[in-house]
Each structure stands twice: as C-alpha cells, then as structure tokens.
Amino acid sequence: MSKILNNIKLYFSFLQASLKEMLVYRLDFIVGIISQIITQAVEVIFIFIVFQNTENLAGWSFKQVLLLYGITLISVGIKTFCTDGLYEFGPKYIKEGEFDKILLRPVHPLISIFGSTKEFVAMGYLVLGIAITIMMLIELSIPITVVLILKILFFSIIGAIIISAINTIFSIASFWTYRSNEVIWSFDRIYTLAQYPLDIYSAVIKILITFILPFAFVAYYPTMSYLGMNKYMIYISPIVAVILWIIAVKVWNLALNKYRSTGS
Image (cartoon, rainbow, N blue to C red):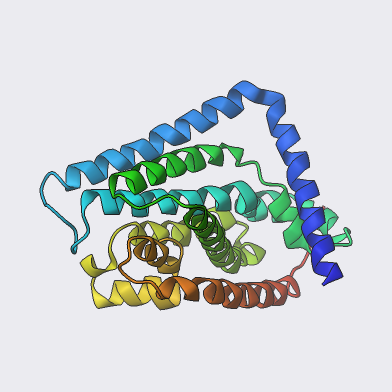
C-alpha cells in the first residue's frame, strides 16, 4: 500500500511540474482551452441538428442525450488532463530515446509518462461538460443534491480511469511501431459511440462498447442511473475499471520486457 501511495505522490509531483511548464505560455494555454470549448460546442450543434429530424433517439429526448454528452465530456476531460502524456510515448519517448532516461527512475515508467502530460487544454472539456451537465439536470428537473454531485464526480473519475486503461493497453504498439498517438487515437475515439443511446446500434456495436472496449461504462450507464432508467449497471463501472487496469498493467509490463533501446 505504501508503494502505491508513493507512486501516486510522485505522479502528482510530475503533473505539477508539467502544469508549471505549461503556464509559462499563459496566452497559448488560454487559447487552447477556448479552442477546445468551441470544438465541442460544434458537436452540441450536431446533436441539435439531429433532433430537428426526430423527437427522440431510442426513447431518449434531446435534453437527456445532452446530459449524457455532458457527463462524457467530464470523464474525457479528466482523462485528457491526467493521462494524455501517453500519446507521446511512441514518437517522443521511444523514437527519440527518452524512454531510457525514464527507466533509470525508481518508479514505474507509466507514472512518469502520465505525469508528463501537456494536455491542460482539457480544462475546456471540463468547463463545457460541467456547464452542460448542470443545465440539463436543471432542465430535466433532477434535484442537484450533495449526494448526486459526489456520485457524478466519483463515476466521472471512474470513467476517466476506464478510458485511460484502454489507452494504456493499446499504447504497447509503440514498443514496435513508435506511433502510439495514431494507434491510441484510433481506439480512443470509439468512446464517441457511447455518447448516444446504445439501442440505436446493432448487436455487434453494443457488444463492442459494452464487453470488448467497455466505453458504455464511462458515461452511458451512469447517466441512465441519474435519469432513473437503470439504477444498477452504474455500480459495475468500478469493477470494470479495476479489471481493465489489471489487464493494462500486466500487458504493458509484458511489452516492456520486450523493449530494446533505439540506440544513439
């Protein structure tokens, strides 16, 4: 347990150092946040356009789908803020030889890589996600209680952990291709399928995002719980997160044993 706590402490130390580095260029930091908000606002407009041609999606109203979207953005924002250093694993650490330096540190390499994230523009995801979530809770007449706020916070973090675990699993491709950003992005974007009600998809897609790449547990099942549609599936999310991280660490360690330095 003490080793885990030390790793967590080191992770936040690395993250703090990265944040200080980012804030040296504050204008760029602010512009990045604004650009992320604008980008995600375009997706909100897309959802609005979809509902101009239908009253509901698999029984979900416009406001309910927006709540799902807002909850998704919160998890994605947390994930992006905390672990997107993984995207640079191949092109920066492996290809340029920086990984050898990390291996000299008395801490698991993933801690250093996660802590070196430069994606603090993820604050844009968080700001928009929180704003949409609050507005839709009010619009849907869902009482905003302390319990609900803590519940949304907890399961949003769990959702971020699930996405991070999936990204970690696919990042092992970098040990051979040096292109973690493209590989991770290809699978990471599958989470967008879970921004909409699962009943609009075929059985194959449902199986994919529930059992194979379980993005449905990031926000879909939690949102169903907040809406009173399904009160129990949400509690499987922490179990999914733990299982995924056990798999991710074991797979990553196996790939790490195959690592050969790029040389000088």
